[in-house]
Image 1 (spheres, helix red, strand yellow):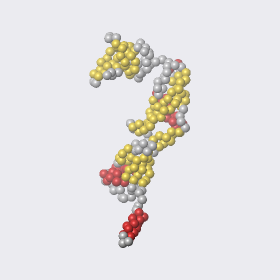
Image 2: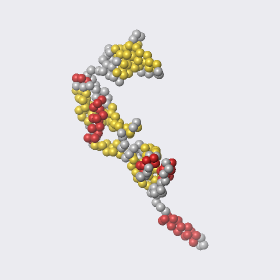
Image 3: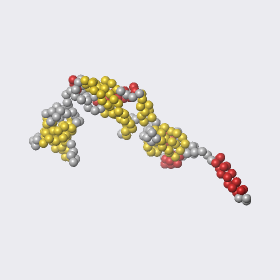
Length: 249
């Protein structure tokens, strides 16, 4: 019976402590770039402290928690006092940008039209209604497979890549329709074209005469008959007059 007062006192003490305990404070933050900077989480800092790096921004499907201790340590390294007004942690999400169908169509058009081969016209871009892209991209690059050498309409797809500097953020595949005129039928390098055959090994370069044995385009690989040996070797066509031998095991 004498133990009851002790148990009661301990219980009341625990209850009192739970009542006065401060709940954990977590602030939600969206970040635009690929890296989290202190300035993304704390406003009003000098530029030197604001640019302190706290690591990578999470993928758009997830979050990342950065503690107050991590932030204050980064600030102290730059000679800035946190002032004690920070939350316990920051939950960081990647900021997304919603692109409309017209936005995507314009991006495809701007990126592709200057790269279209002779006689090829972009006639339609079949963009989705919307697309959610990680924000902060600085460059958009497009890749379009070489269209066939014939007249008429053809369906293809543009690979649209979003970059922040040299880091790839996102890739979209956008269906497109192309219209091919008679100008699209010739190959860049017809069969029988005489080219300079080049072998490169480090700083050493050897050149010889050669003949392309199939119809091919610049950038593609074609067999080249090398003179005077008569051997046929695979080479990549750098331009309409130069073929560089592929490295072989």
